[in-house]
Length: 277
Image (cartoon, rainbow, N blue to C red):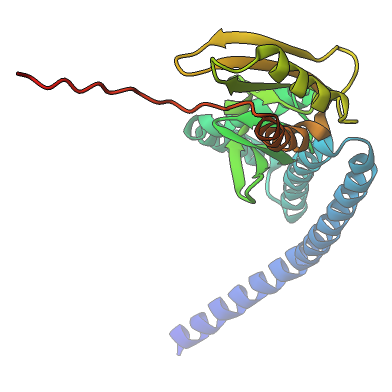
């Protein structure tokens, strides 16, 4: 009988302890959950506002900064929520720092990509919307994230390049200047009139409105090849007109050479056969 009373006393004591802890920690837990939900909502709203404000001025900075601010604020929110529940923030921050060090050592490449993203934002070798050539890819910069830069190629492929590679290697930015020089080479036969061929090309250049008068177009004999006399053409156009002009000029020169009787030779070889007696 005594054991029964002792067991009931223990159950009552446990129930009383549980009730006391519930009364003590339940309000804190509910408040922490509310704080977490409201905090996440405010952070998302804040990031959205920053994105809208910055996107109009600098789309490159917008995506990077929004991602960084979102991660930082959410980490601070979690620390605050842990403090509200009763977790010692000092030990929590120390544990978080130790975990961060371990993760940092394991993710050295990611940290290098983050640093590369910061360097890209500071020195701005390219921006969102620029056409660049990097890591053997050519395309339009679609987005610069915290760790990676996304490029859309002209054949509609999505290329993800680590920022560390972009910040530590050479790249070509085709959108840095509004003017570009179009370099072309046309070959004519050794028996053709060089001055006539140059006059045909010069006439075609003068008739095209996309050609800029300054710097002045140049048509010269650049080399004497194995099968042709090569004429080099140097013409300046707006960057947006580069490829349309280049392709159109190839077609026009071929048609004009054919109409004027100027040949465009192709590699050929004469073979002489000797009959042995």
